[in-house]
Image (cartoon, rainbow, N blue to C red; front, side, top):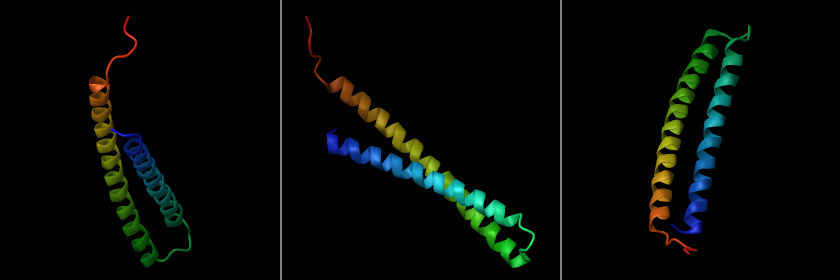
Length: 89
């Protein structure tokens, strides 16, 4: 695996982590809004719908992150086994 591919995979993992943090932040914001005293029932329904979407996104983001990390481990293991051993005495 080339250095560019490694960097791209790291950037992708960072982006997935950022998206996960964004989804969790949205969920916290929606929770705060849901507890405000001045929301009417339509606002609450909309917030609950957005929260449901946020939770589904967070789950998919976590799945993607696990898949990428597993792929990285496999690629790194393959790279280690195919690399020549240097500095043997």
